[in-house]
Image (cartoon, rainbow, N blue to C red; front, side, top):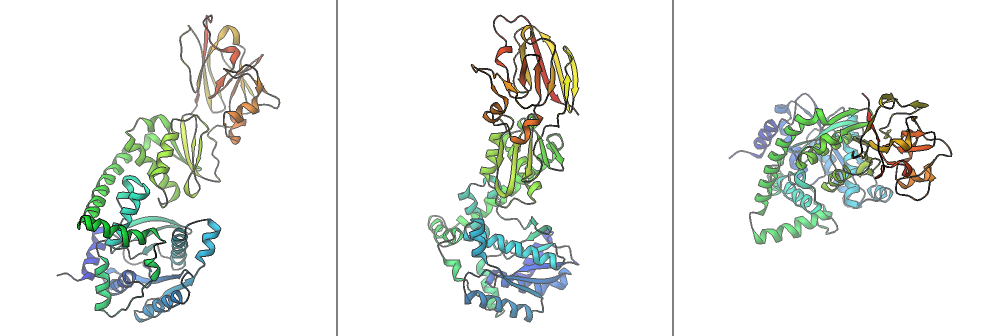
Length: 468
């Protein structure tokens, strides 16, 4: 029978977790899983060709017990001849400042600490002691939170994570090791790990799943854990296939810009919904650096917004912004320029009929028989009412507009507010004007007085598209 150390070494090699010649930051809480991990890695460091650095954080939540954990990890690291960074950070204060659950606050503070340690020792990889039992619990948590197929995948042996100092990798070499095995390993080597009593508190969702939900499920089916792990592996296979499919369509749907990622809306909507979801998840991962705290509900609201009017803006988790434009959608982070419209300066006469290139737009004017349909960037107007003397400009102080369907004109500013045109778009929205006033707020609405009626004899069809 293989030793636990040999199994972990083979898992590391099979998954390609470690390059060799580097420093690994090992997160050690003092519990059996992380203590087992540290001891195994210390035994394997020569075979792996790596140096180790222990990172332990006192969350200041358990008084003297927390301090005793820190002392234990310090002494263990010294016994194994591994340098260590031991710090104290106030998780409760962070929780209040950020208005988070205690569980989420502890996770964020802990991972930021790991990132800081990695940066200080010039490391790119952080090794964590998550086990097979943690994987079962994680899959169940994801099911309950509605994270979709990606949640069923559970934790991966290696995950990219965007730390404050740059991109890091989270490694989990114990994902095929059970908690019973880590406890047995610690007994065998006399490691005497610490017991965190908060791991039994029902205040935390993971604890309720561990101590209440899973035992209940096991009373119905003793193989529920193995079934969930099989589900996770199947989901991983399906998602790997979708990764390849997304790669094939990426170039025709996605444009990477300095301020985020631009999506071709029609190209995205032409894909199967499963591919749409998976592509959006990849886009979000590219923007944020990882998918922590991104759930299925975030992807679903983005998909729903694809069919909304230009100007629809979603503010999602971690400062993520999804903005619906005319023919594109922008995924970015707060603080970046989000307006997809080019600056519009001066006044530009339209060729009627004919084509006109205007500040990032190409406008086409055609005179046609009645019967054409118009929406979005296409407008059909009564030519005999509007005439051929048309120009395109941005808004001006005092502009008034008589929107289609309304009895009276109103201030253009009020129309833009009512139409939910974002504030930073309003100066860039093209306005088609005649000598009698605004005839079309491009992308939104034409004027009531130029609409096509049963008596219309000639239709002026105007169409705007972004020029290359």
